[in-house]
Length: 352
Image 1 (cartoon, rainbow, N blue to C red):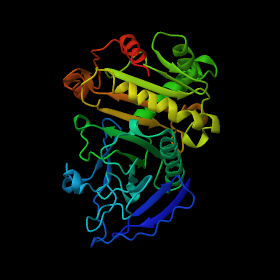
Image 2 (image 1 turned 180 degrees about the vertical axis):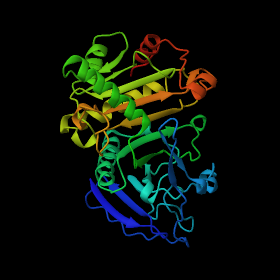
Image 3 (image 1 turned 45 degrees about the vertical axis):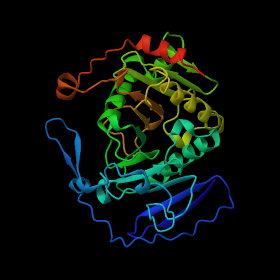
Image 4 (image 1 turned 180 degrees about the horizontal axis):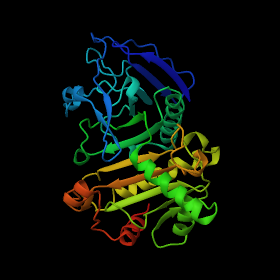
C-alpha cells in the first residue's frame, strides 16, 4: 500500500491509498473553492445524558446529483470533482459538510473505488484489503487528535437508508465522546465481569453463537452470526475469533482472511430476497473501543472490548421496509418482524 496526502482547494485533507507502490499522485484541485466554514457543535441532553451534534450547515449539502456530476468520481477534463486525479484505488478526504468538526471531532468520506456503477460487493479481495488498511490507518491517525475519543468507520448503502450520493463510499466519524451505543455495551461488560469474577461477556456470546442455529459462517479467524436479540430484519455480527479492541490490533492472519469473508457476507445480503430484486440497502458499521478514558465504566479497560462489524438491512421482505415507528423511535424498544433463527437460515441458504 502507498499512502499520499494532499490538500484540496479549500484546505481540506485528501489521502490516496494505492495498491501499487510506484503510483504518483501530483494532481492539483483546480476548483475555485473558499475555505470550508462549519457550524458544528455538540450539545448534551440533560435528561437522557447523550450528545447531539448540531450541524445546520449540512442543509446545503449535495443531494442526488446526476451521475455525470458525481463529486466522488475522479476529475475528468473540465469536470472537476472532490478527487483531483483522473483515477484512484481508495481515497479518503475530509467531508465538505461534516456533522462533526474542529473541537467537535472530524468527519471523513471513504471512496472504495473510482467506478461509479460498482458496489463494495463488486470489489476484488485486494481492493477490499486496501479499504481495510485505509480504515485502520484513519483509525490510528484520528485517534491521536486531541478532540477525538472514539472512531467509527461505516457504510450506508441505498436510497432507502438515506444515501444522497450513489457512488460506492462510506464515512468515518471521529467523535469527541464515547457514543451511547458503545457506552451501553461497556456497562454490560462491566456488570458481567463483576458478577462472574472476571469473565468476558463478548467471549461468552461468541462461544455460545458458534454452537448455535444463528451461526451464518465461521472460518479460521472470523465468525458471523445473527444475534439472539436482533434488532433488524436481517442483521449479522462479524467478530474476529481472537478478541481485539480495534482495527489496529488485528493480526495479519485475520487481515488476510477478512476480504473473502466480508465480500461473501455482502453478496449474500444481495441474494436474500431473490433474483430480480434491487440491491439490498444496508448499513455496515465497525464497533471499536473508545480511545479516551473509561473511568466511568468501573472495572473495564480497552482490552475488554471486542472489535466487531455489524451489518444489517432495513428491508424486511420484497418491497417492504422496516420503519422505526412509535416504539423504536419514541421509546428505543425495537420490534423485529423476522425470527433471528429464520434470518440466519436464509443467510446460510444463499451462500456462494
